[in-house]
Length: 422
Image (tube, one colour):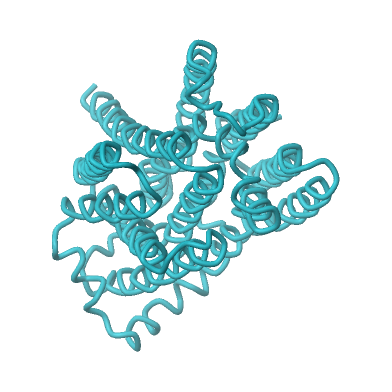
């Protein structure tokens, strides 16, 4: 009974904290949508997609192997120091990507580009902080970071709203929020990102890269291409303004993705500990539970969004956005999110088991289908209907992951999870 209440508390805390982050992102995007032009709104949405990619890169390169190491009992600072140094490098990389996107794609000033670079770098460091908190059984610290981030973002949005929201002020709000979100982790956490020397880091991280991370990165890049190739290609080929109708449709579905990624940080350590104890059945139970929770979140989000848009259509629809295209995009992305809700628990299950190569194989096949489909549809029927290419890729990837699960002799419970998608 005690474990049940603890589980409910952890899920409730994580869901509430991530819901607050999602709501704050939703509000600032709605404010940009109604205060600035379609191009600025599309740029903000694209930069948030880049931040999400940064968190995924953090998951693959440091978070997943760090969780496995902690679950195996490697909790002293010397054995885990390399993860912090590598994450510092990732933060610099993600910051550079955000700056390049803001400056060259969005044609912003250097000040705005630098602010988005800082925001993206802080987001990456904060994300690893959340991973460490969950891996070391300190979920309150992760939730406090989410809440501090969201409160700072909302305060900044409120102040800017009365003074006139601009792209520059929006970029500064993200920097302030990222800084506030770091406070619960303390200065010692930040210092650990700067303490390691690169020679020892490379030496310590090389076997981790060889055995786990390289396949995880291949899987991440191809998975990202499968899930978000549409966002990148539309923005790069047609510009941020063309991405605006799709971004408007995805606004209300963002809570699903945020909860999916955040709850993964709870389930992956739990599954890793189960595998470390040779308890595959327990890991299977976590996968079943994770699937049920995600599908419930999906259903609640769809109902809430449909109700909101029915009674308050002006929230997402503004002059210059074609309502039909927004609705079509919403329908397609809702289906994609449902597929991802079924796919993600099995994906995390294989990660926790260390089967990164199987995930990479599945995502590479899906990536080819997605990119080819999106490009062909983008050039023939337009940006919104090109989303069908993303759906095709997600289905291919889900089939590949399910096939990997079924290829081994697994307990009946896990087969039941796999059968959800079939």
